[in-house]
Structures are given as structure tokens and as C-alpha cells.
Length: 264
Figure 1 (cartoon, rainbow, N blue to C red):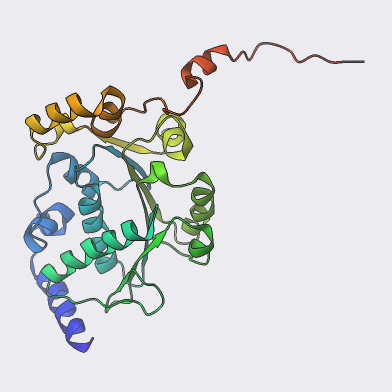
Figure 2 (figure 1 turned 60 degrees about the vertical axis):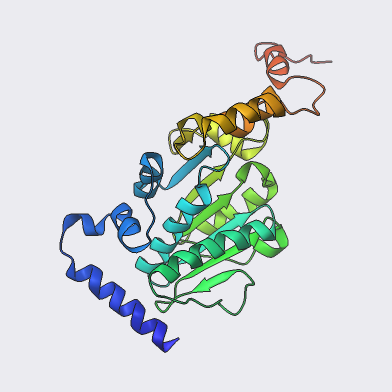
């Protein structure tokens, strides 16, 4: 740990010595120090200063990679901070933490776990990155969260979302939801469509991702069916397959101008 602290200090001094304006830019930092070249949309997400953000993206776009870079930057440059990563299952939260650790290794750091959580990174400035599965009994207890990332948010239960939001209050933390759609339901769908102007919304489809070959997309379109393709690659909130009625049709049947019957 002492050796890690020395490397951490050297990295901080190197950044301070670099007086160029772009040296404080997270995108330039990612390129220079993490060997990560973000595309245009990824750069927008990294540079965002919004307190609330929603990333609606295609499969294989790199949402976990770009937000892992965001998490590491927050941990390194915000001493004693807590970044909490919530994912539908333990495997996914663990994979996210491993990506953040891989970036840390690019800096010459070898962060250890915090001693309390199976999937965690602890840094010499006393900051932590902690990954947890979407289970209310394992999430409660965290406080003063500076950055909260909910991965595959469309598959995280609404009850869990309500349980973690209060953790942002004291630390005035930032919140990013990242996911591919999963039907017209849940808090991810609701926040994207009805969450209001407080949310910065970023959407990117597979057709806009330079890393996904067009030939592959054509194969997926032919073999997986229209609804699946539109959901997984075109970021459309398609109808839940097991639903008996189409939700848009149900919505059109609702009237707000009818007065309820009153029996006397």
C-alpha cells in the first residue's frame, strides 16, 4: 500500500505540473493516462457536469467502459469519496469494478479491496469504488455517495431504485442511469420519458456506433426478429412480449375528464 501511495502521489504531481488547460479535461486525461480513446458520444458523457444523467445505448457500445473511466476519475480527484455501482447481479457489478481496476493499473496503481465488500477498490486518498448487486438488503447502509452509477438500469427493480436515491442527499451526489431498454416499464423508462428537465439524456444506437460492423447488424436483424433488434440495437422501448395488451393502446383508453360516480 505504501508503494501504491507513492505512485498515486507521483501521478497527482505530474498532473499538477502540466499547466495546459486541456490537462484538466477528463477526456484528455483518459486518452493520456488510461490509453482509452472515447468516441464523440462517450466524450460527451465523460465531460458532462449534470447531476442527473441517463445513458440509453445499444448493446456493445461501451457504457461500462466509459463510466468505469468516469468512476476512477471521480475517485482519484475527489478524496474520501464513495462511488457506488449498482447492477442487476453480482457478476455484473464485479465486472464493472474489474474494468475500473484495469484502468487503475494503466496508472501504475494496484488498488486493493476495502476489506468490507467483495467487489471494491480502495485508493490511497481514502476514496472507494464499490460494486453491489441490485438487492435491497445488500445496498442499504451506504451514505454520502458522491457518484452513483446504476448499470443495466432497465433491469433493476423499482424498489431498489427508491432505496438507493436517498444515499445521494448528504453528499449531493451525481446519478447516472445506463441501460439498453427492457420494455415500456420501470423507473428507467419513466425517467427517460417523464423525468423532466433535470435529466441529461444521451442516446446512441448501434447504427451510430463505429465499432459495430454493419454486416453483424444485418445478421442480427434477420435472425433475431424486429422487436428484439429494435430494443437491443436501436434503443426502442418495445412492447413487453408477455404482456396481454399493448400499453400505448391502454393509455389511449384512459380519460381524465370523467367524474367518478358518487352514490348517496
